[in-house]
Image (tube, rainbow, N blue to C red; front, side, top):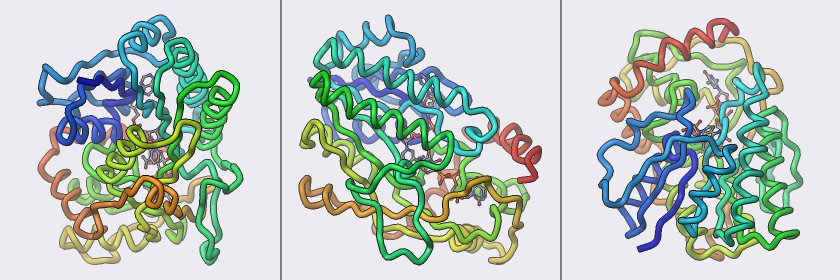
Length: 332
Ligand code: NAD
Ligand code: TDX
């Protein structure tokens, strides 16, 4: 039975991937996660002990990484500092984890001949105009805007260099905005759901016209599994589910699914350098690996995500006050 090492598996998308792998394959999984403010061990509760192992540690810790790569032939690398707003206030952890951490893993992959899959974001391509008919493809030039996206772009370039210079067996995927269970309340959709559940109004940055291309975390997981099993080392695959929505439309839908008036939200201070629009053309992944998203309706995926937050207040409540107090300090 194969064993996969998953970095950042106690975070939002990593924990969804671990659940997906345990439910849909025979693989065993080891998670390596340092449990920053964004990691939550409870997101991995209930997994079968004969197929799941958890190691608390830092991806920058080379001796620990070496020991783990020695006994895993496949690695999926999710660990990152992931929130744009945090990167605008304190960029340093983003350089450490996203750049030095990825470098540390790549050096181990080089030593052990590991099959390495690097998880990245559409934000490396910068943004599109709202009325631009184009979408991002694997050939779009890199043009990141924020400290977060520039460190993710840096990590992608390191992966490409380690493939070309040292023959590391690596693939890269760049995915659009994810939603689903286990997402930290600092992020857009969980923040608005939990605001309403705690009697606060949703907060829209600026005019709220920015567009994001939403995909359910389970669809991201199925795409990553397809790339891990059938992707070609050295290749990059864009992952997206044709889910473009502006932020106002998302807030209005959350309000109406929770039985509130559609205009019961506040406009707050805009994000500095706020990217206007992301949009993914995932034709290559669909054509070459036969992948298709399973969540065809954003409204029903969002509705089940709302149910999850309603049913799992114990999971998110301890994070909520600290996240909101960080936002309040910025007028957001
Ligand atoms: P997250 O912030 O929810 O989780 C990150 C996880 O990494 C946490 O569990 C944290 O404890 C862990 N971590 C952070 N620094 C670490 C370190 N130095 N060593 C070990 N573990 C560490 O992030 P997420 O939203 O689940 O994103 C996961 C990956 O997916 C990231 O690489 C991100 O760039 C990428 N991505 C995210 C989205 C999105 O919509 N959230 C979209 C595309 C790509
Ligand atoms: O309270 C809010 N109000 C608001 O209007 C918050 C938290 C966000 N926003 C806006 C900013 C964005 O236009 O909502 C949109 C989504 O914001 P985030 O959830 O912070 O996501 P984004 O900045 O788009 O980045 C996300 O997708 C790409 C992830 O956090 C990244 O890790 C991923 O790479």
